[in-house]
Length: 161
Image (cartoon, rainbow, N blue to C red; front, side, top):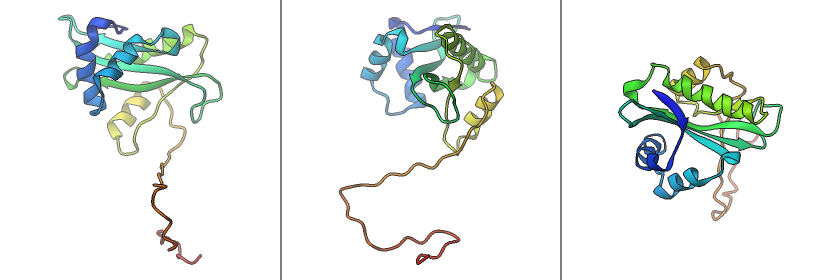
């Protein structure tokens, strides 16, 4: 497999791969990432000898990433490798190329994330040299609904405490 920047003719395969990682991915998003200038990020693909793609990695720039000490930071926004080529070095090759892209721009940190329940992704990240910096639970509040005024009962804590 060859790892290279994505090109316009990769559009259909990229849409397939992105929908495997992000099921609600839209065609316009694929067009957007193919059109954005290299200074904002890079979309890498792992090309099979027959011309189809076996994986992709989307790398962006962020002003901040949890656990990092520099800014900007290269950020592995997403990575996917087709199941039939997993554990063959494709994911590691995509990460190495992302590292090279970042280093060429003078960046010294590459950050990423995964869902707490995604043990496969956690294992992959640790296996290619990432170190866990923290765990987080994200919250959302619907501002169209009024507060109930009723105290919440949390495990191990009295509601009136």
